[in-house]
Each structure stands twice: as C-alpha cells, then as structure tokens.
Image (cartoon, rainbow, N blue to C red):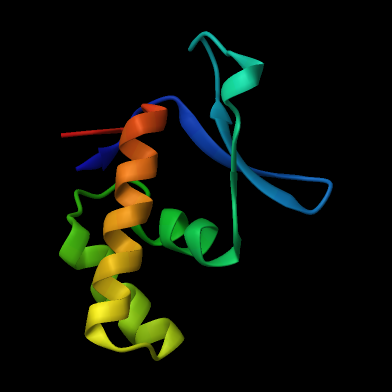
Length: 89
C-alpha cells in the first residue's frame, strides 16, 4: 500500500484531516478526519510503501499495545483508508 499522491494531512482548527492537495479534485463531503493515533500513523508511512503489519508494528511500539489489538486496529484503519480512496496498492 501507499498513500495516494495528492493527499496530505492538515491541521484544521486542531482537527487532523486528510484532504486533496493541488490539482486533485476535492469533494468536501469526503474530507477524512483522523484521530491522534491515525494521524500519527499517516505521518509515519507518508511517502513509503506499507502493509497492515507495518501499521500494527508501529502501533505496538509507539502505544504499547498487544499484537492482537494492534493488528485489529491496523486492519480497521487500512480498510477505512481504502474505502475513502486515499491509499493505493
């Protein structure tokens, strides 16, 4: 997986949001708000290829959670990012 080109993480009045940048058409109904951990993960994988296991390992290390919880959270987050169309294979 990779974050699609043209999408950036912005801080909008204290809310972390992913939005289109530059020439990418913007649908303002599809701006994605991220919680603190999702925004942190986005920053960690921005510009590099990653998998669910990458996200899970980052969560385990940074947030000191067990492997099963980290994997479940990573799978849910990646599925949400795929559904929103902000990542690609």
